[in-house]
Image 1 (tube, helix red, strand yellow):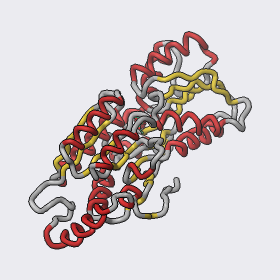
Image 2 (cartoon, protein in one colour):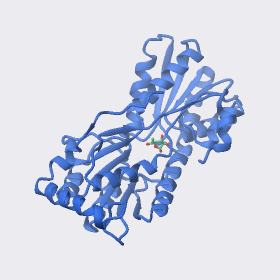
Image 3 (cartoon, rainbow, N blue to C red):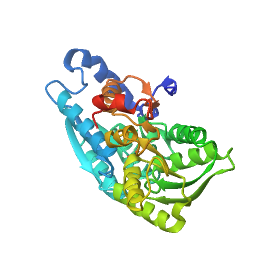
Length: 333
Ligand code: GYE
């Protein structure tokens, strides 16, 4: 899988800081003498606020854990906020980080829209915001420093490509969507639909949100099974947790997941790779890895006045029955 990245350029937020740029420049100059490698003033830990979406999935829990442990390892004072799946909580968290005058803010935006006002407040306070994991839609790209995460469109395309080949371009699909309005739900849906468009006999017969949760995947799958019975050939789930919930529903209905119903999902959490290895989910998964060290490295560079990539995409991997078992021993989440 190709690593996609845009060319390196001055972050837009830095270009708009005006006279602050000069101050930043002076600080950078001084930093050689008085600042440690992190970019924080000598003796003072870097203070970073992290506004997390919630704890909806195993991927998310691993993501939180990775951000926290890496912060501890680096001696960063991480202010962590769990928004419990509510955008208003995340906005409130960002506001509180601004009030605390943190050095930088990391935001994993629950949904794509509605961030401009609070990002404007952060910009006014001259606090760089790194958007991680999920993308946003904004009318002003200068409101955040950079994005680090996965390419969800590419994931949707990969899933479609693999599936079309595996089932010979034929089958009735039910789709378990992620959280409504979230970038991974929007993009994985769109790219997958486009990817299968060239196969007239490969059809999405139903599609509903399971909110990226295991319980959601189970409930929606139960409803799909009730409605469509044995006419379902394929489950396309926007994440593993929903697929694992769907597996429970399929087994409860007396069907064999992975055999009677093909299951394609995204994330590659340990349990899903195990399911692939045992044939219950004998379908590939695309991986959104633990990429947190990259976030802190990027913040260090931003605070040191260095250029960073505007959009840095992680590399996704594909798992199927040929490589799932081998991947398990080194799997950390
Ligand atoms: O796929 C899902 C999580 O934004 C990439 O959010 C992330 C998604 C991931 O809850 O499991």
